[in-house]
Length: 309
Image 1 (cartoon, one colour):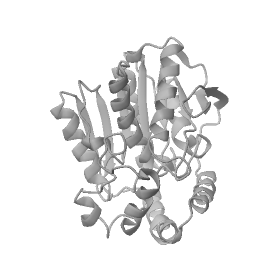
Image 2 (tube, one colour):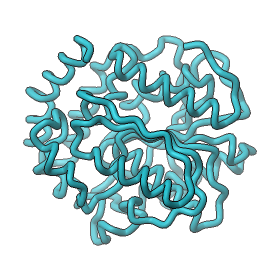
Image 3 (cartoon, rainbow, N blue to C red):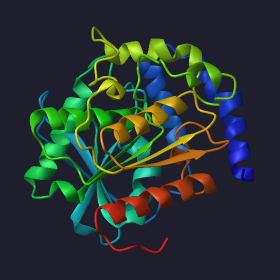
Image 4 (cartoon, rainbow, N blue to C red):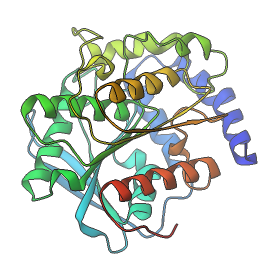
């Protein structure tokens, strides 16, 4: 464990987790994430951001295009940000999307999908599908598109796979998920087993938070909790999770689910790291290493040549 990771864990345990345990209003949680994102160092200086909009079922969906330097035009990444479906935006997650653009040499599209509780399920996955459909309509071949996301965004990408499958869209070339939240019924043993060692997410609040997004739905509906979905020939997947996370078993069980459906999964389990540690940017060695591995996976699976990192 690096010295920087030690300090990150101490900060999360002593300041962030207690704050999240106290927050009860989504608006307060959104302000908390925006303040936290502004403190994360290491976003590439050469990153460029372009605002755009795509047609969606609830009106147009704002998206942000992220690139670093001269990005190739044939291949693209659709990134779905985390934030418990309650908070977050393309701007709060630039510490992930900008390094991902730099390490892959690809443009990254980040939808600003509708958030709960104002817009419960299935609003987020409908907006994600709208973004995916737009990429296809723009001429990108499905096997030249990678899906990626962390936490709720990681769960959202698997829900998007299921919805795209249901609607007859071709599957993407690969997926890369960081600490995905795929079971909002919270049946994994790690919710209880890791409650004492999880440094960021308060285990006692997970059902309350999930309820904002579930609304009147069923927590085991595959579009809400894709762990319960039936995948058909899923694309190659890169999944990574921290051993101390309360959501550890979400990742492990999703990997098993994809393998049972005939999918190829590259599973990474990392000791000592907090939930979705990639968010803490390339100045954290463990985050940088994970992002480099994910970027290499994406480039190989999309048939691109390797980039020096």
